[in-house]
Image 1 (spheres, one colour):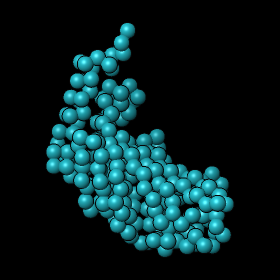
Image 2: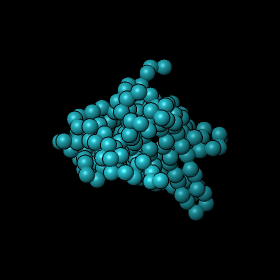
Image 3: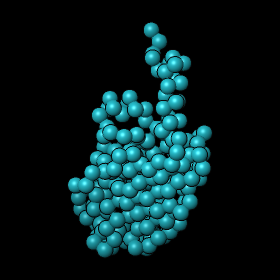
Image 4: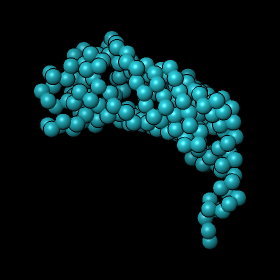
Length: 206
């Protein structure tokens, strides 16, 4: 028996649902729960590879696929970033590094978004702020609508859902973080990978 998803009727239904989801300017919100946020950062040197994660982020993205425009705002609490070693995490958050006490959040706020509806991608330019400094960056993100049937079966909160992914690099010295004191164990360039699920329903206040 052929899978239902392989039948022309089922494929047409999924495509129609995706088209309806992106029919007009829509706002999607991040941070409904930790399972909808997956952010990884990685430092590679000859002496050590450090892989860290956080499952905390807040913000939203607005998309207008007809105009090919949008807006993105994301905030990540520094104190939620972990590398698997408590002492290393304390150093990372200390005044000598990211200085979480004075700069508690890493943020991104777009200034220009160019959406390619056919490819499901967006070129996003904006202000990336960390450690009290801001630098303009441009990244390419992909997006994919999650079928209503799938989100309901997975017991997601009510609303329309979209999965966003992106990868980019951040040079710590651009933000006033000096890695020389780490003795070659920390790279000046960190690789960032992000997967965020956005929903049309707002995140409930906690």
